[in-house]
Structures are given as C-alpha cells and as structure tokens.
Length: 255
Ligand SMILES: O=C1C[C@@](O)(C(=O)O)C[C@@H](O)[C@@H]1O
Image 1 (cartoon, rainbow, N blue to C red):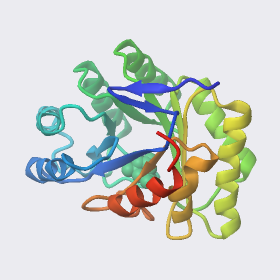
Image 2: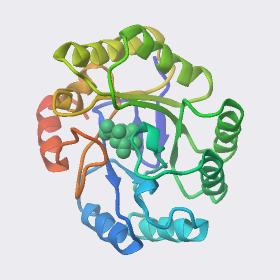
Image 3: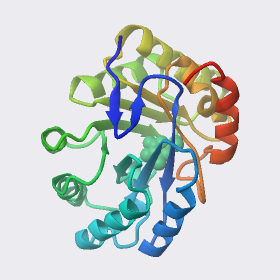
Image 4: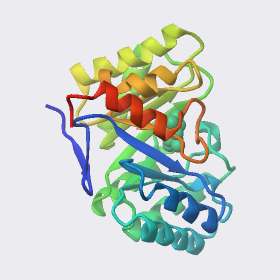
C-alpha cells in the first residue's frame, strides 16, 4: 500500500484522481478574480503558478498576493509553483532567486504543497526539501520535458529518483510525438504504481495527443490531473468543467 499525502481535507493518492486548477493571473486583481471564480467549483486543489505573476521578484508582493488568494479560498490546498523557463515556465529567473523565493515562501508556512524541480542544483534542492519538511509542507518533485517523451525506463528512473531524494509526490510531464509516447507514459505510471511507488505519482502527456492521459491517467495510477479555468498553464489542459464531467463518468463507483 502506497503512502497517501493528505493536505487539508484532500487525500492525494487514494480514490478518484484529484483535480488541480492553476492560477495564472499576472496581477493581484486578476489572481483574486480567478480565485473567486473557483470558489463554487468542485475542484480539489489550486496551483499558484507564480512565474506568471508580474511582481514575482518582489517577495513582499508575492506574500501579499498569496494572502489575498488564501482569503478567497480559505480551505483549498494551494500548491506553490515557480516553473522555470527551461521546463515550460513564463519567466527568466536566476536559479539563486528561484531557491530564495521558494525558501522565503516555505518560511511563512502559508502554502500546503510546494513544487520543486528535480533537475536543479543538488545541494540547494536538498536544502529546500529539508526546509519544506521542517515546515510540514509536502514536496512535489517535478520534471517536464516539453520536447519529447523519454523512454519508459528513463521516466521510471526519474520518478524513482524523485521519491528517493525526498519528494513526497513524484511528477513527470512529457510531450508526445506519437500515440506510442502517450502509451509509454501511462505504462510507466502503471509500472511505478504496481512496483516502485512509495507515494503518489502524477504524470501527464501534454499537447492534444496527450489529452487522453489527463482524462484516463487515474486508471493507471496518476493521482492528480490539471485542468484549465481561465487560461491553461500547459498545452493540452482541458476545461475544468469538461474534466469534472468525464471523471464523474469514469469514477461512478468511487469516492
Ligand atoms: O507540472 C504541472 C503540470 C502541467 O505542466 C500540465 O501539463 O498540466 C501544468 C503546470 O502548471 C503544473 O505545474
């Protein structure tokens, strides 16, 4: 039995896949509008993609925006994510600033989960994981390949590495060039769950070819699926209302 990760009232890694919606507003007002639009929606988790925020280099403004989002969504688990440019993010940012930003956010203890990229400098990355754990914030260790889909073995090895070095949840997103690539990521997910997973796994195949993985990933063991409200944060995300409807059919007998 794999360990689940519980944040607020959401158990990641058990029952139906959880729906996560990214907030991508560039200003506080836009973020608050996006958050308000989600208030009455039956989503499980929100991800603040802070790399979209125009004032991301001003830590006080980041903290203030986070507080405003929290006021609108007091009970929703919030993932804090700065996606680096080389893994599909919006902004060029020095890595020293990436580590500093994440560290300062962890210290104020107002996020429920943090996304840290696997392929970052080892010592700093491990220090960040340690700080997260000290502050009781579970870590999603992530890797995104916007150009291609690695081999099944390589995907498994990255997911295993993510859990070995302290990720509470291992995540991998890859771009397919064929339907075989999509099958390969679903296959890697299933192998992880049946053989190697120590905690929840999140995978997705991106772009239009990969949409099937966002809908059906839960069948193979992916614990969270990302959907768009106002604007997608990655290629292939479908509208949250469509995803909710499809998942309600696929999970009729589940909680
Ligand atoms: O890692 C992910 C997954 C994602 O890239 C996707 O493909 O849905 C979207 C990102 O916002 C998130 O951080």
